Image (cartoon, rainbow, N blue to C red; front, side):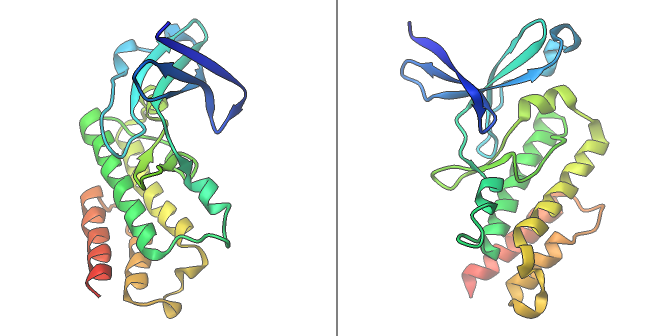
Length: 209
């Protein structure tokens, strides 16, 4: 047997099962309760992007969908629970938002869907520091079109405000901090490319100081 699954009961960190395949990294399996005959099978695709928890496979049963993903790391929600013992700095927040935006651009332009539920719970930091967006399989099912794409961008700005926390007051921060606050309060019609350009300036200014 070169492939098998071990179910987790209770579910741990959103994982229903772990996939083991010979000579391959482990995979994580999540379950979505939904009638299989209500899902257009052609809405699914394998993904490949460094800022996504990539979807490998989908299994459809009568009442459920099972998504097989690559392994993911600690969520931003779990990191925030470590505060004030561990606090993300302004540069880390800018870097996280930049990587999330790169993943979101792939979701919007390459896959052609919205994510629909971006939050600190489904953005993960890997052991090597990579930032990855999770739950793309569910997004393929629940895609809400252009309105959802606009909401995704607003959710990134909302995430920035959350991660900046109480350090958001410009009077207590330097130039980079003020710029980060401006990014977090971007106008509602801002685009991914505009935010990527802005956040790139923050990071560049930091390392040139």
